Length: 384
Image 1 (tube, rainbow, N blue to C red):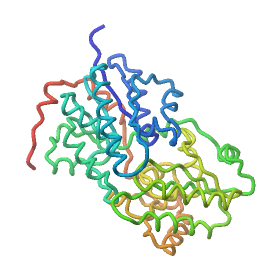
Image 2 (cartoon, one colour):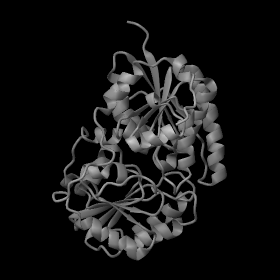
Image 3 (cartoon, helix red, strand yellow):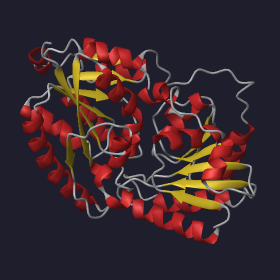
Image 4 (tube, rainbow, N blue to C red):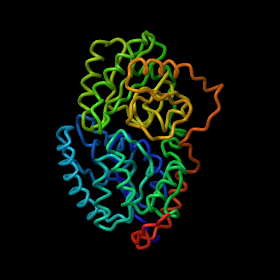
C-alpha cells in the first residue's frame, strides 16, 4: 500500500466536534487517508466538562491533547491561553507531521492552530469561512483564518463569494453546506418520551432548549440574559433545559444568572453543561423552541423542523431560514418573538434551509485525496 496523506483535525469544543464528527468518521473509514486528531481548548477545561471524552466515547483515538490552561474568562486570560496553546500545537505538529490540517469555525482557541500551520508551512483547510457574525470577536478571527487557509469548505454560495472578494482563489473554495446538517440525518434517534425521562420532566409535555453565549464586543450581556430569563417567566406551561455557556469573556455573567434562575425554578428548569452530540441534536428536534444566540439555532434547527428565537447581535449577519425569529434585547420583543415561534407551522410553510448541503463528506474526501502540498502552499492573492 502506498503513502496515505495524514489529515489532522483539530477540535476545541463540543460545538465544532458536532460538525466535525461525520468528516472524522469519513476520513477514519477511508483506505487512502490517515486520520490524526488533536483536542484542545474547551475540551480540556474541567469546568466545561472535559468534553474530549465524548470524542473518545465515539471510538476515535486522540493523537495529542493540547491544554490551553485557561484560568478565567478575562481577556488577558484568553490571550495567555492562546499563547500556551500555540506552543503546544507547534510541538504536536512537529511530532505528528501532518500533510494537511483541518479546523472549523472562528473561536479564539482554534486560532493558534491556524497561525502555527502558516509559520510551519503546513497546508490548512478551513470549514465555515466567509461568514459574518458582527456581535462577537469571532468575525475578525474567522476572516484571519481564511487568509491563512489554503483550502476552504463553505456552507453557502454567499460565503464563497465573500471569500472571493477577500482575494481567495475560486478553485480553492468548495460549497459543502453544513456538515452538522448532514451528520444529523444519520444520528441515533431518541423519542420525545426519552428526552422527558432523561431530565425527569414529569409535569410538562413541552420544553424549550435555551443556549446563551456572551457577545464579546459590547456590554449588553447583563441585559441579554436578564431579559431572556424574565421572558421565560411568561411561559408557565413549558420546561426549560439550559445548556452550558462557552469560555468566552463575560460567560461567567451568563452562567451566574442561569444558575440563580434554576435555583428559584427547580421544578421547571435544569442545566446540562455538556449533553453530548446525540442528546443535544435530539433535544433540539423535540423542543418546542430553541431560544438564545447559538449558531445551532440558525444552522441546524431548521432542518430538524424546530423554530428558533435568535436574540441580540451575536449571530448578526448570518442568513436566516424562515423558522428563525430575530429579537432585540428588549423584554417585550423577546416575548413577542417566542409567541411567533410557537405559532410557526412547518407543515404549512415551504422553505429550504439555508445551510442544506448535498454529499458534503464525499466532496471533502475527494478533495483531500488530491492534495498537493507544494501547490497549496504557493498561495496568491486574487483580485476580483
